[in-house]
Image 1 (cartoon, rainbow, N blue to C red):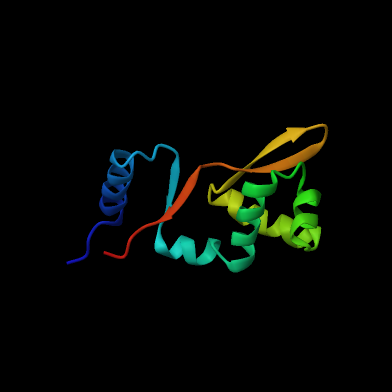
Image 2 (cartoon, helix red, strand yellow):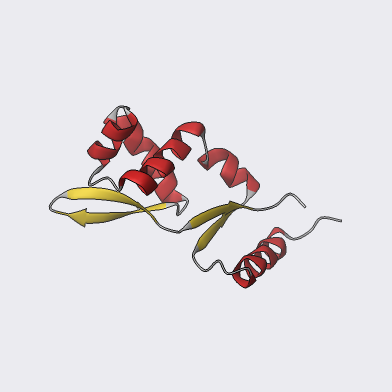
Length: 106
């Protein structure tokens, strides 16, 4: 008998909250496989440590093409991993949550 994914995700969220986590995103396994590629994880780490002032600055920090970084950020934005602070015509990528968890297998 299959377990309802929504129920297991809700239970996981309750357990995280009771463990003291208050700002987190839970990705299901399929979404995580799509979203959390090695290159996108590199962007997440750079956003966390560098706090880039723009997408161009982030691309420079990871030594990648701006267009490729922008495409990866679009995916991270679509899944709620990043958001943007807009200032003076620049979009500064920021992590939307303190933590990102992947739904457990069991």
